[in-house]
Image 1 (tube, rainbow, N blue to C red):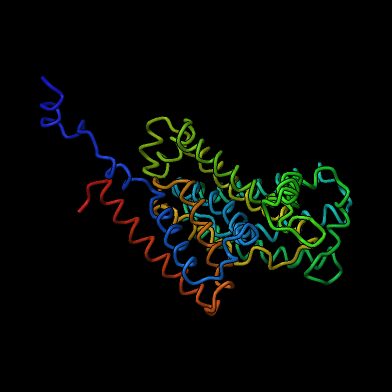
Image 2: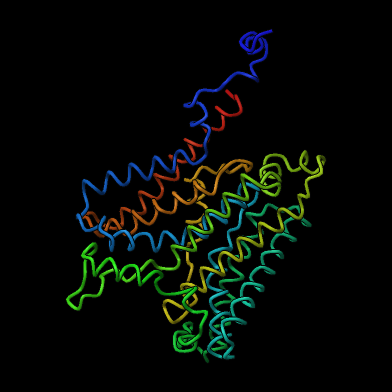
Length: 368
């Protein structure tokens, strides 16, 4: 029997067209969104937006949000939510500030300690969800308020009444690990390009853009690792299986409990990483750090192709979803539009992403 005859007998072995395979990719909407937003700003924004310095300007906030968004995407693929991720940024920032300024710990101790405590709190979230069977939306919503309140109280304790802790930059300025989490990378290369006249320079001859902000490198690296894990490892298969049908996954031998705990820990540690990067860069921390980032991270994941029902999505989609956020947030300052249009854009993008993802889900599953 020929292949063509078999294909007529069983549609499961039909060769899919390139367009069909492309339509099934969860990141398609986010990539299309980047293209459309780029075209919009090429038409409406000042030309400096797409210079080297302009690109770095919008990629920096995109990177910070993207680290959270990729972690949130992986958790959503696993079938859960974490609404405490933004408050965790503030809480981890408070811990990190206290460790470095009040206690005087070196970064080689303060960073693992901060990450470890954040990870433990993430596991605690997961344990509560698994043991109580409550929706993670409710459990982590409670965590949102608890951690935000703990940040306020903790900062007042360590500062003697203020909700802002200063002196971080002075405390870690000479630490050999600091350049890994703050400042700009590849400065020598940018200076070389400036000397060759390849990029804009200041009057002193120094490049206008001194290097690549390290959070962008963390963002890219995290996206690559997350994509590899999801698409090339057994653990990635377990994440998709857990989010698709946790009962069936459990019956098939997937360690559902371990997968979910690991993902909750990941989101908390991603928030701690963002806290460490932003606190060192700013030289201070405060109780409002990470405010509303939990919703922006989830929206980034949804724009990136994640379904609210779990079992579908990609880290690449969240990567491009974060870039859309960064472009719009900073890009509006290069236009004559009121920056409050960002809120309207945010709601519209969320609605369109959900509609688009729902249509893709029906196409993939064959629902009508």
